Length: 249
Length: 89
Image 1 (cartoon, rainbow over the protein chains, first blue to last red):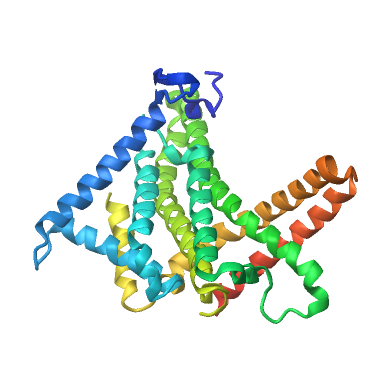
Image 2 (cartoon, rainbow over the protein chains, first blue to last red):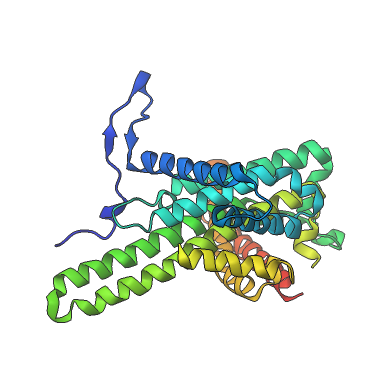
């Protein structure tokens, strides 16, 4: 029973694939990602297929999700942000379903691998940089100067702003990764206690795992929401320059 | 699935009354998990940049990292302050 609680996060290749030195072996995380993509695509496409005036259960659910994501975009980026709706919706649904599927015992949480969250975070932040420079050119560097800064403070404020900009993708990636990993480590430790405790006392930690699993469902949703909102805020900063999202409201 | 649809339903019902960022459930939980990592990430970036300057650029150990950590702490507090400002209004 002396098993590391991090054991569940280890990945072992199932189908080794190393063409010309690049390791693209198929492991559990890759398969779970395919499952997530397939499930999201299946649910959303079949929900949109009927498109009745009086929506059924599935269509109702899909409409709520779409309305929810639309609300996030309008709230953070305003009307011009609706251009990016497909991207934001894909991001949100992938992270949400990856988080939720990971809670099924025996499956795997893709978002507990920092490389997955880092690719999303760096991708979204990189996109905001590309958008900012292509829309505003050199003027985009103005985001490094907070409005109303006196000139003599600039040598101090520019490095600080630069660091807080560079911290954005890191905090985005680490937040999702750490929350998902921590939740599953706690579940793993509690399960270990339940097994080693036996029938006499083991029911207590087992009851806690059930409560924790319920809490994790909420966390899965909130983390997907936070990741999406912050991606929208960063994109909005780049699109509107001096993003109204951070200061207005 | 029940809990999820409940959360989605609840937030969607709120949608017509107030935008999500002002929804008490999301604003509170969202800000709580947001600010902590922002402080930490800025410190890591500041310290890391200072360390890079020390080791590869100027050979100024440990002053680059000292400066970097200071600037990182300032950046972290600043972005946390900005998040809190957004939350308040």
